[in-house]
Length: 116
Image 1 (cartoon, one colour):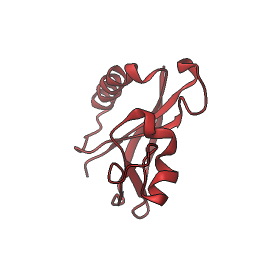
Image 2: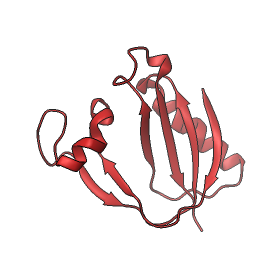
Image 3: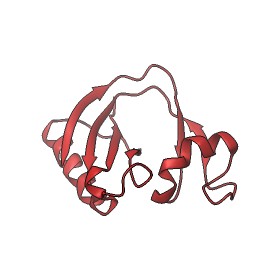
Image 4: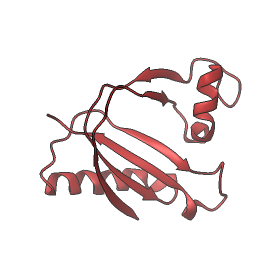
């Protein structure tokens, strides 16, 4: 289930952690501080910043396998709402396997910058 949470104005770049595996989502912030991944390997996490930008954001509830469909639904909602999408996107895994063994409890924040 997704629910739109509206737009948010950014006021300055903020740190973002990029990682290549959903299993790392729960440790990304702490690992980025150390420069390590969950398995102790360096270079899978890159620290960066994003410029100030307006974003559309929604929260997806459910297992990670549902994320592609959630992104499609979110994109459709944005188009119907007249929002012009930029190319970038990011996810924030606020509740996942690190917090609950039940995928129905998992929450993923979908963020899509807007053009203009």
